[in-house]
Each structure stands twice: as structure tokens, then as C-alpha cells.
Amino acid sequence: MWGLTSIFPPAPSWNVEQVPDQTGRIAIVTGGNSGIGLETVRELLRKNAKVYLACRSEERAHKAMDELQRNQLPGKIEFLRLDLASLHSIKEFSEQFLAKEQRLDMLFNSAGVMNPYVGPETKDGYELHLGTNSLGHHYLTQLLVPALQVSAKASPDRPPRVCFTSSIAHRATSPKGFDPTDPTGLHTYCYMPAHNRAYGTSKFCNILSANWFQRNLGAQNIVFTSCHPGILKTGLVREWNQGFNTIMMPIIEAAIFYPQRMGCITQLYLNTAPEAATKGGSYFAPWARQVDPLPLARDVGVQDTFAKWVDEQVTKHMGQPVDL
Image 1 (cartoon, rainbow, N blue to C red):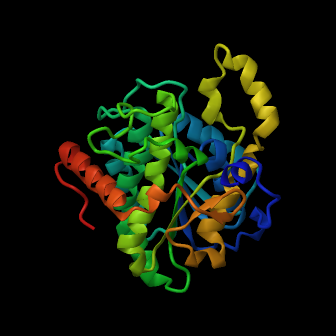
Image 2 (image 1 turned 180 degrees about the vertical axis):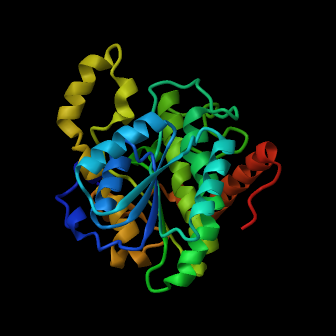
């Protein structure tokens, strides 16, 4: 049933019009130049938030900002360059943000890559899916904790929130979930094709991150969640329109893909709805429905193993782990 309702979800019982006023609140949206990130930025601006659009390409960022500004939305928007495939870029981004702002009220870890192949690596030498989607977002969140802590103390009745955008594909992770000797699971036997396993493992690790942060920082009045945003018509699948897929993708899209604008519903619910402030450590599916993830994602030992692995990679490349 979980699979069917995640692919064909019931009509939304919550929608973006219900996002409360965000005047005075500050958000970061990774991948905010396109896809569900762009839709998320649009709705936050509509509700008076100040939004930092974080992405790799300045040209694409300004193109997106020009589009948003034509909508004459009341919020404020600013671009900061962020390449999640580079730990140094992530560190530079966090330093720039913390120099501008003392607090952070909402972090949307929504950027991602999903390729129909494996092989490309991040600037630090990691398989691209895992390095960008998982390692990058976990490290970014660690670096931004000080700003989240300030927000938690300044507005105890409206705690800061962090949403990790996962996917139903997290169920395609390797049988071990996360193994530091085989981080992407590519060398562990599994019926899934390599690219599905790599992407699935990266999305599984997003849930591990959310649950690990909630266990370790939830008592400080910070809320961490994860979600499957839906199967959507976004640029995330642009690399899939090649070869035989040029025939199949239009058929699949017509059958099960939803409009891009709907992809922001669940993560906006989790980071803005008053009732979602009690949902720390939860996993949601479209449209804003709480469901159970793969049971391994609840395994504290697996969560700790991934967090330890992240610290080891950060130490290797950056000299020391982030002290929380």
C-alpha cells in the first residue's frame, strides 16, 4: 500500500495557500533555481519570507530570480553560490550566510541529482549521488546548526525546522542500508541496477540524516524531518530522455508524473505548518501525509554509522569534523 499511495497519492488535504505568514523569517532553499526548489522559493516569497536561493550556477540563479521578481512577490530573495559536490564550497557558503545572518528559521535540503548511470564523481572524489545528495547536505546542515540554535532560542514557540528531501526511491538502497566499506552499495549484491541503487542509497541517507539530527539536536527545539515529494515533472529526470528512454519517458510521465508545482507541498507543510512542529524525526509522503520509511532508516546504529562516516570524510578533506 505504501508504494501505491506514494505513486498515486490521494488528493491533498493541505495546500500551499495554508502556509502561514513568514514575515521576519529566514529560509535557505538548496536547488532553489529549479524544480521543487524553485516552487518552494516562490511560495515562501509569497508569504513574506526572506529566502536565500542556494545553487551552483549564478546564471541559472539569476534567471530564476528574474522570473520570481516578475511575479512581484512581497518577500526578499538573495543568491548565494553553493556547490553540494564540493565540501569547500559548502564551507564557503555557510561562512557567507553566517556573516550575513545570525539566525535561520527554515532549511530546505531539496537539491539533488538523479542520473541514469553511475561514474561521475564529486570534486572530493565521491560517487555523485551520494556525495551531493547525502554527504553534502549532512555537512551543510552541521555548519548551519549555530544559526538554527539562535532561532530556536529567539522564537521558542515557533521552532526552526530542517527538511531533507528524500524519495520513495530510498527503498532501492542496498540490503545493508549504509555500509562505510561500500557507501553507495554498488559492490553489495542487489537486484537493483547500479544507478537505482546509488540514487536510492543517497535518498536513504537523507532519512538517516534527518533522524540522526533529530535524536541529537531535537531537544534544543529544532525540528528535523524528511519527505518523498512525489513523482514529478521536473528537470531532475532530464538526463533520462536518451536512447530507448526517449520513447518510454513520455509514456511514464503521462501515467504517473505530477506537475512540478505540487512537489513543494510536503516540504512546505513540514517546515511551516504549526501542527508539523511536533513531527520531528518523521517521514512524509505526498501530499503531506505521514508514512513509515524503510525500517532500516529507524535503526539508530545505521544512523550513527552514517554520521560517523560523514565526520571522517569531512576530517579527511577539511582538517576536522564539525563540532556540534
